[in-house]
Amino acid sequence: MNASLHLRIRTDIEAQILSGAWPPGHRVPFEHELMATYGCARMTVNRALSTLAQDGLIERRRRAGSFVARPKVHSAVLDIPDLRSEVTRRGQAYAFRLISTRRRPASGLAEVELADGGALLELRGLHLAAGRPLAIEHRLISLAVAPQAAEIDFSEDPPGAWLLEHVPWTEAEHRISAVGADAATAKLLEIPRGAACLAVDRRTWRGATHVTKVRQLFPGEAYDLVARFGASRGG
Amino acid sequence: MNASLHLRIRTDIEAQILSGAWPPGHRVPFEHELMATYGCARMTVNRALSTLAQDGLIERRRRAGSFVARPKVHSAVLDIPDLRSEVTRRGQAYAFRLISTRRRPASGLAEVELADGGALLELRGLHLAAGRPLAIEHRLISLAVAPQAAEIDFSEDPPGAWLLEHVPWTEAEHRISAVGADAATAKLLEIPRGAACLAVDRRTWRGATHVTKVRQLFPGEAYDLVARFGASRGG
DNA sequence: TCATCGTATATGTATATACATATGTTCAAG
DNA sequence: CTTGAACATATGTATATACATATACGATGA
Image 1 (cartoon, each protein chain N blue to C red):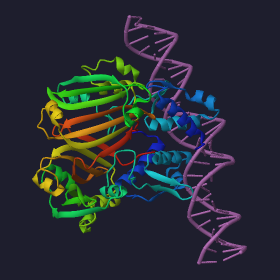
Image 2: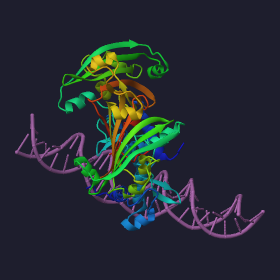
Image 3: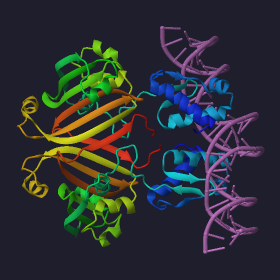
Image 4: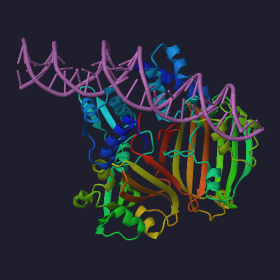
């Protein structure tokens, strides 16, 4: 364990944020409060908070205090694409059509890990841009982590956008591949059978707990996944 | 411009690194040297160097000094895949077969920006894993930025691996899509015509100057591009 | 020649202090 | 009710100082 004080303060606060105990927008204690809590100088807590701000975990405003940052939608790193906002940003009309929704137990090793003892919400839907099919979505949501999801009506609003706003994620994994469209996919996306599709498999975590898993299938010509990033990265 | 001194010191050093004037491994001036240069306290230069270290641009070693960091090959962010090392890490035999190489002037707007007044090196090649085709590569290298590339023999070693080691990059962009294989592609990759392929278009910069541009085509089933990343990110 | 140890040195951390700067809040004037 | 000026307050930056800690390098001895 690194026992430097500013690092301990930093990780203490980080833990509150990652656990969800301090949600986005929550005010973290003032510097003078942390001084009293840890019995140290202001420079020390200042350093802890400054590095947290540098890493984008909190935002600091003079006179107001420091606040847990809302997840940035457009960071420099490859991020979770919110299809609705991307499509509307391009000036096209967006729509989501729910195909099926179902609450069911986990089956299989990967799903059991995702469910974490609870049930799963399984959704299938179609994203439309300018009236034409943009992507098929097949999603599993862990109701143990996001029980509120069971109450939401996803018939018109896509689950991805809702999750981004209500269940903060801390880590994600994309697995990207190309597949030929099978008969069902081809019909929904209105493309020839066997046409190349971009498949994005995404898993999302909050801290150590798995939140959701989704597979999106795009017609190959309709969508480019863009990732822009820098070489440097702290650890 | 933000006129805080520690930030000015930071950006001064950053400029030396990004311009390539201070290559990876180069020793940054000692804290006491920077104190003298800027006429300030050690805490101030310490802060500048600490944030550079936090962002992974430099590495600091006690008693030895601070050094420009070598680009990390395996960071948590989606990084430039080096196909050779990935394949060998999976325990398969790797080979590269050069199809064509050619020095030619830039043609078209995008190529002129890449060439930056110089010529381009155009390469086509095939990556093989365990004797089977893994990817087609079509690459353009700016000889203005990497003149040494003209002297290298790429007939057996892939240009990507060489570039990673010799021309540090600071920024990259991936554009990923799915395409059906045309006749030439299908023949080289030994797949049916029209089969789904993953297309990765990558552009790489050092600071503001464009270094290389490459398009790689993978058979859809043979390759998954994986990106794992966190939600937080500094500016 | 080689291994071991001491020491000088650069960075790492923490402190008290000081002043600068941005911005909610309050309150008075219009 | 609105506008705006004065104020309080939290953060931002910079300083001098002090001691801790890791380690490159040279000296010492087998």
